[in-house]
Image (cartoon, rainbow, N blue to C red; front, side):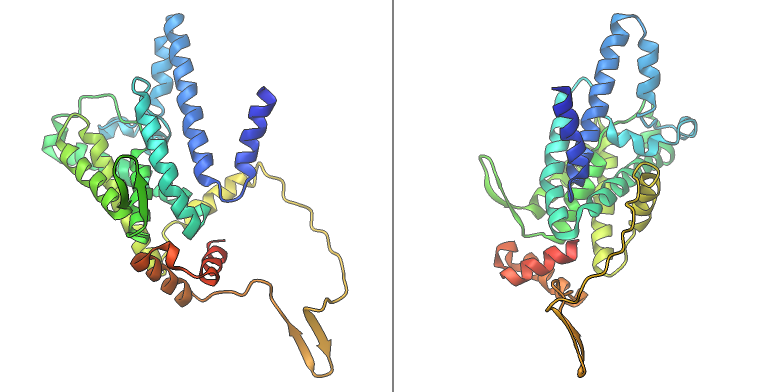
Length: 305
């Protein structure tokens, strides 16, 4: 059984276009680790150990406390409340549904970029209001914030910005365009920004804002997230062995013919210009993904790689 689970995890991290699955696994593993540690700490009277470990994932509202553990700027987005199973359940379900759209149209790396940007924007919005706005400063007497919601909001709003008229079929409701789903979440968080989970809702709005900005700027040709993938690849290079380069020579095939009149070659995957991709994305926004021709779908798929 252990070997089977290990193989499943390994396959999830080796499979292409599986960033959403990998991030969900990380969230679940962190949740289980903290939950088991909480139970063991309670049984043996070592709650101090659990509190110390949990604090490393919880971002405090007071800036002076945050400076003592600055890594929580991102680690909070991989931990969830242990007293409410629906916290992680709903976050991961919504993330899974919307991240699949991002992967289909923009590729797997874009999900990682949006997740990290959303987490950072959420934590910075949270820190700013609790250290600059009097209403929140007076209510900063709590230990900290955890949850992937800000990162999830970034993915949701990014998908809705990219494909506003894409339709989800919701249970008991029917077909709903994702721009309305994203709008509902934003309004809900805005209304809750002065409630019991004010910090969490402020973080949601920060994540939503960066998700929108990222897609708008990406459509203009500006990619804010390249540094995230560069850092990730740098650290990955220490754990993943580079394949040995093997040089081989083969005769020219029929797809590449050389003669006295010149040399011609045929590529199996013709590249698409940015203008073509933009036109396809505009068509999706207006008429939906189903309106694309087989050729247009293939061009979009190739571009996402």
